[in-house]
Image 1 (cartoon, rainbow, N blue to C red):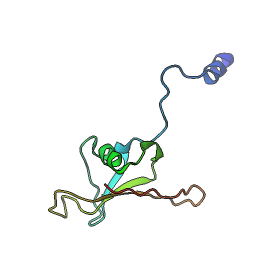
Image 2: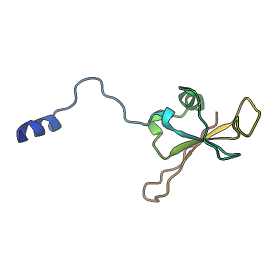
Image 3: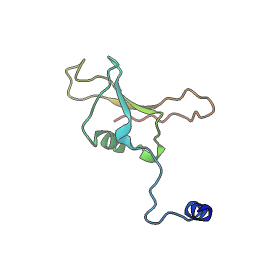
Image 4: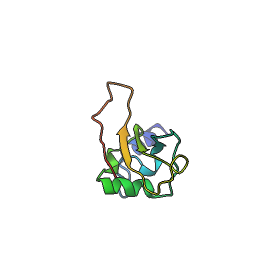
Amino acid sequence: MYSNTLKAIAEPLRGTPVPAGFDPELLYVECAHCGSPVMWEQGKATHILSLAGIDPLELDSSCMLVTDGCPMCSGKDQYTVQIFRVSGDAQTRRPPFFGNA
């Protein structure tokens, strides 16, 4: 049993390799005006990041989207969106990537 476990760990996975990254649809979205979380339809975050030229492979759980309004506090149909990287640990802090859509 021990040798089978090592063999399973040592052998590369079969199939198409999946690039590491963070699913843009899992990004937290918040209204900068009222602080409410914003829920979008499926695919909206991916589309916005694509328009802004941000590679999803650069994302991780420290990234968040911030809008300048939301349906709860504003009557606008369109909003400005910015992406921020939030990190509390100076050791893992990377330069922030900003993008406007």
